[in-house]
Image (cartoon, helix red, strand yellow):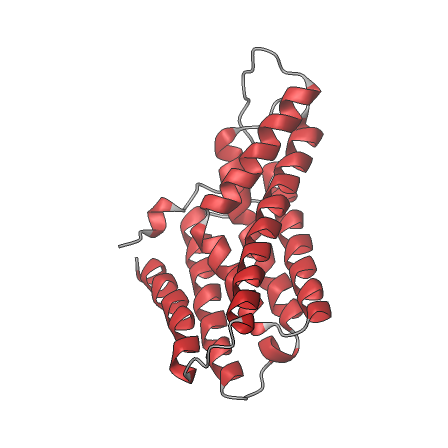
Length: 210
């Protein structure tokens, strides 16, 4: 069973100092870029949220708006929290992140039924709102690692860039899988489409209960 504690981080204002033998700009860029990629690709909660956004957002232009809104939102709170301007306790934020995934899973089911809602009509609004909370989750990982005192802007920027690279890689994989399934022309029954949706909702519900 997945445990929310596997993905939760202590989220607080301020940052820890990383002691590096050779704290250069290039080393900082490389280190934090890779840390950002690693964090998003190992952050199952964030990936499930992005997957849910992909499933509920039809059309390329609407998808670009939605992912951009999510990116801008979590970049704002990631930066503010990592720099110590704002801070929220970790457990409530992680619980709301899990709740955001459950909410999107429910909205996807409504979308498949042909029903309307705010998340279906304006997914970028929902992506931005919940993206602010996901930013605190990213900041929790970053503050637990620490920021180098002499290259803070570069570390923060490239950690965020790394997160975006990892996110784009994940999106490309999902879109490729969906495209291949459509090209296969296999006539899947309607209940098959609901399997990943219920899977997303179930995992997120377990995190929320814990």
